[in-house]
Length: 280
Image 1 (cartoon, rainbow, N blue to C red):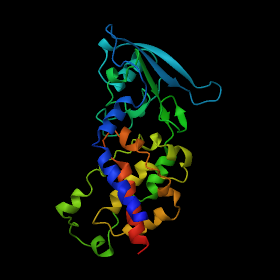
Image 2: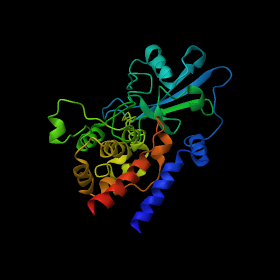
Image 3: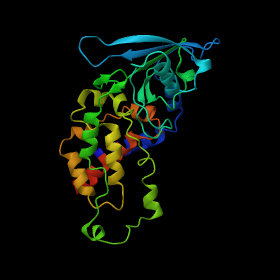
């Protein structure tokens, strides 16, 4: 039955982040070859370049980097290259602490945050390869156009919607410790889009399928005991079955998430609630 199928998917996605398979996947996901910085500290950094106009085709530009004179993270390398070799190099950055999600990009074949990825583990065969997030329109160099991504985020109304009684109350809306714990693994999402841009289903149907990041955000409010619009939220997702059911449990999302969250599990829980609460 559909209920049993969803239950098995939920069990799979719940255990995946703890499985040896995922650990192995994290190791081999991306480029293959000996990793690490050569003894002389010299690394060739290959970066996708495009100036945002049609007069020059996208290309890969190679920079030589002495890692002994650079900070340990990929973002440190990019900043050094921009400051000392090529001021036209364009990328997003802000917090440098894995909190803002601005510096999401494809490094050594895997989506991640440049501020959390160290140069040593990302260097393969003496080369560090950096591209923008895949299957997204590029504005310039390593800067993708996230307009659709944030339009979809806006569509799920990512804010608390209270009942009229609580809305007019002068006191805070309390929540039990048990209900608060249900939000763990959901509220930590920083909307970096690493998971959505690693998802083949999102590549194929990005205009209809909301993708793992947005659905994780949607479930964060569906699961919140203080919210009074859970049924309306589920109905919105059910208006077009591809918004949720384009997910095929490929689980790239859980592999690449820099915050170690599991969007696949949240999507399975959305499907369960849609089936039980909308068909009741």
